[in-house]
Amino acid sequence: MPPVVMRDVKGLVVGLKADIGNAAEQVGHGADYYQAMGDYARAARMSDAYQMLKKNAVPWMVKGAAGALGATGVYGAYRSHSDLLGGK
Image (tube, helix red, strand yellow):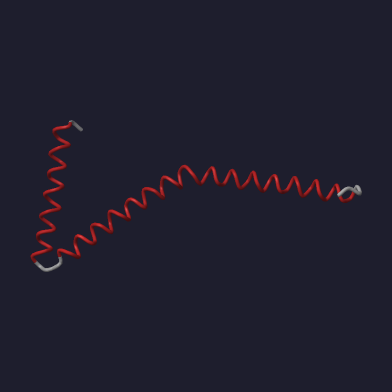
């Protein structure tokens, strides 16, 4: 989007938020409206962070856990065969 259009859209959004906030204040719910908008913004940021972690971190954690379990299995097999052969 061209910068001029971006600036106009941003102004439109700011004006819309102010208009809705003013309407909420007129009926005595301005504080509730602004609290709800803050809660929504915080939840949206948390959702974005969760999606990023799910996409990027979880596959690495699963691979690491699988590797650790595989190493544990190999060590367990070594120990059991070592015990059978009289080693410690």
